[in-house]
Picture (cartoon, rainbow, N blue to C red):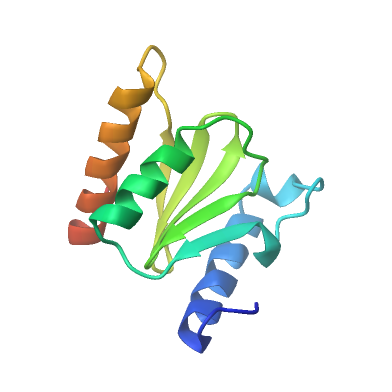
Length: 123
């Protein structure tokens, strides 16, 4: 895991272990679910949150692709469904975007979701 600090490497390993327990993510083969599918921003701040909201609302994610911000991680379960983790805890799944939601509405919701998870550790 080149470029990750030892703490980040440990966190990504935890996220991979949690993802491999998921019935959908564990079947990812093209590409396989491993550290190569992780994008990681080292902190949660307004700029990285805005970037993540733009990224998570675009199309073309593969099952098992992941985006991390600090100790928050989104792992794609296919299409618009994401497994959401905080630290070493599985919080649940979210849809990005929700059915009928515009891209701008989805991005605003994702920014609020990241802020809430960072502050409270809950969905």
